[in-house]
Image (cartoon, rainbow, N blue to C red; front, side, top):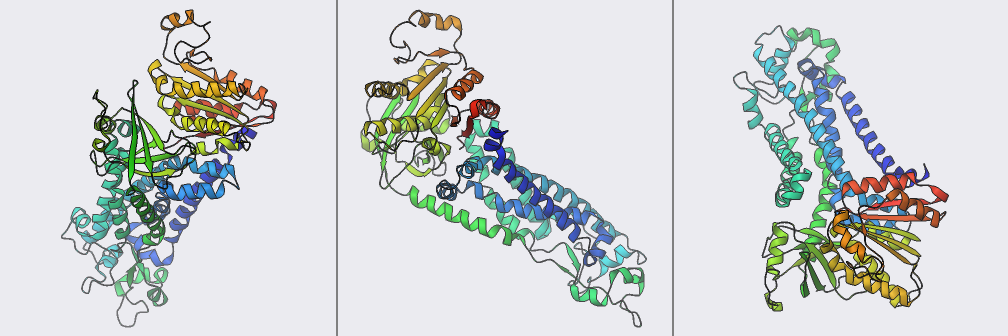
Length: 565
């Protein structure tokens, strides 16, 4: 229970608060449209009025939140500010994209409810115009303000039209259609299969959020939902006068014709703050992206991994951080995230890029990856770099015991961590709080080891020379090799160095038994807080998350941290 509270307690609390606010707003605004002011509106629309307005309030709240998790500079600032006070609170910021998705799902849900309710509303508005019978209250209400067109209740002003025409000729109808189409495109293009296979589609359609927010702010300008004015209620009590509608406004009656007005637009009050923060965020990104970046070294690794070493004036980083990169010669608009593999102690920044898509392939070609000759520096493409931005890996050195788990190219943030460890021990830094690192690297094929093996070999030699063999334990797994494929290397298993990696630590075949690994670490470090850091697929994250919660041997707490981009 203790591990569950440490890992998930604050996240669950935040989600419950968020859900609670949504529930409160829904109920509050549902009830707010059951008051006397909207008595005559309900005569025409019934409870569909409340069913339309309650989700609208929740939409305002969630649209206020949706931009905040993607303000990366704001999150980096908050992470640095609260890290010294609460490591648990800082870790919640690493789940920003998860929260962003949850808010998006909530927006989609309330949008659907809002649309369905308004479809009923428009049908009933139209029906009340088509009655053409002065003995029916809905028809009488629909005729109010027909001549001067000011104090009307029914936004459909004539029976010689249709709901479709009204939908495309009113501000509320037209912006509603635009908002809905933009939201559908944004959500469908955000599906995992599209985001992974067609990133450009995801990236471009996501920028329809600009259209979405413009339409959202303008949506309420038409004031299509109307209620009785405060002044009118004083002289015309709807509960007393609704049965006397045939004599409204006639001499000798105590029920004058009611006056109606629409609510002023409120959405802008909810979203103006986050929109301002996001504009500032984009201005900061634009300024930083204009700073000159010089490519100092290009390395083509055999595993079709491109290594770029660059320099940028004033660039400062922490371990495990990431940057966004743009190559104008490939695309003026596309920015892609890459983890920094350099250490803070180095005088350059570096990234390792796996060639898996159109953009990375184009960058690989531009950097001469398909050529056998070395390119001159002036022929290399120009790059723009925005960042760095904080991640979970920044907290590595705040734990006494650390587990680093990387899958494939997901090892990149830990390259920065391990390099920094190497530099700290070379410089004999006595302020390193971390006393033990367990490093796990899971790879499908041997080629993936090639670019990282040199660093591990250097670390291994350094730890041996300083008699610190116990500081770093590393376990490398070939996950897709079968026994038959591994038989040739098992013959050489007794050799001093591993035949695949050249390390003294032997490569293992298959997948780790995480239950045994966690139990062994818990036994080895009783009463410790162990930071578990993962950069890898969702399935592995779920498996490690469960292990962190279930293992409480010897009072050990496993704190799970996952990289998110």
